Length: 224
Image (cartoon, rainbow, N blue to C red; front, side, top):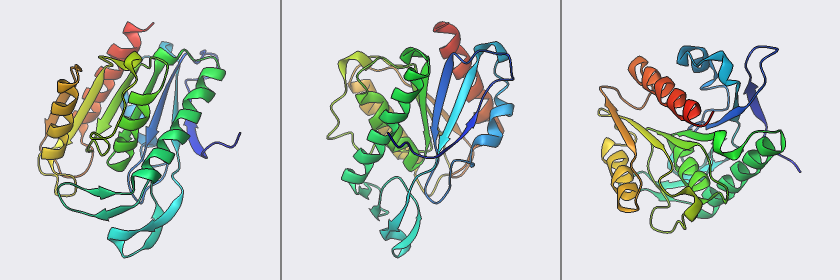
């Protein structure tokens, strides 16, 4: 099987890898975008975490005048409701499922796999994580929105899956309102997402990195 190309980072030599975080970048970026954050998370080395940062394929993006760039799916209109190419989003989620299956084949228990994503990568993370047929460790949704909320069929095995939602209250690209909608949608479906708001734009800030590290620590400690 052919997998998405990816940047991978593992614990130091001699530490057995027993957990994975598959982290999806945003529009126009690539898998290198979030790799520098890993040391800042200050996660215990003993957790043995492998970080997988896949690269999205390059496709024409309508809101950028058809310019070809790395993207998980096309965005047709940049309004508050978002008009996305759902078929492409589902294809990207399927590729993430392949990466999850590969981690399981490499010896990682599914409940020790976290799916993370920033912006449109987060929309794919929601879809991929909530529809995977084996219980995962959690979903981390950063400055994003639940693009498939109206159509998704959540696998029952993911009921009450831990979800972290982080958003900037000055975000003009993906307004915080969309992050709050994601939180409300999940609550309506029986989840209890953890929501953090920060005085930032469409970005990641130091306080958020601290919260991400703390959340991942709780998730992996609970699953150890």
